[in-house]
Length: 411
Image (cartoon, rainbow, N blue to C red; front, top):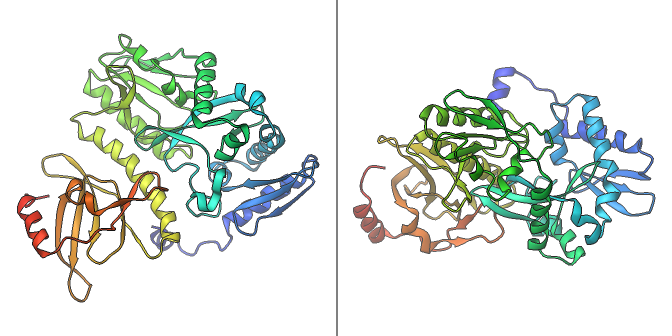
């Protein structure tokens, strides 16, 4: 993609945006009286701070770089100063002090898993500095922050160990705090194609309302049909009903537009509640609804793949691909080529590829359902969203013939 952009726009500037950002942040940090010294990290996109107390602090810059790149210099400075103001406060709190400031947030599955060096944030790379998380809905997780007047600091595995508590303790307390304090009153946005509600609290936790038990279910009767919600980015949540196709289509379009344009995106998909009031993905015959969920999967797997390619040089990182069949149904797929050690995303169908003797072209391609080759795969424990390594033998000619006879229908 970048090559195409260069072709369209001509010669690009040789200035490294990350180097410029690092220099800008260093200048801001040096101006703060509560930082005794600062220097760039040798092995990460980060700054090493020395506080007046002598304590060392590593300030990772990747998220700040992404989230402030469209801000003015003054806005960026305010953001960095606010982060620095909370450096000492949140990291030195005991469990007794911190627990009342814990709040839950909703983030994408790969958020916080990309180390500042650009490598996957596995335990080998970041150890216990990974933020704690729990799956909420597919490709979306719930995480916990210590919310202070200066900043939100993500709770890490190291922090929970230092507090002597479990992940359940932290999540339960954060959810309890939020349920007790958060305003749950939604306002009517308009009545086009039925009532549509939104939150205008401007507290940066709008999307977290989905975590409050019964909150989305409480819209039954207020909207037409079953309630459906979108959380395209952190500070936005809309709730309508599924009774009219026009409302569903409107929410799909809104979610896609806001998700695609936001630096703090969460999901382009739609969500509803089951019979017990739990938040679940909204499923419908409308292909646009399914495509919205698949866009989220594509994005999260793409984020993961870009960083895996830099570290797993001996493995092929398969792409998560989605296409629409002639009958209108949507299918996710990935390819496993014979003799190629592959990391497969979890997809509905896998294309088994046999190449010619020169290895230059596909000799045959056979799509089979995931279940047909699942026994030949091993789940990689450290990866989220999940990937599976092709540790088993590729089907031999006889097995391919059997699979072809069974799944010979056009893909």
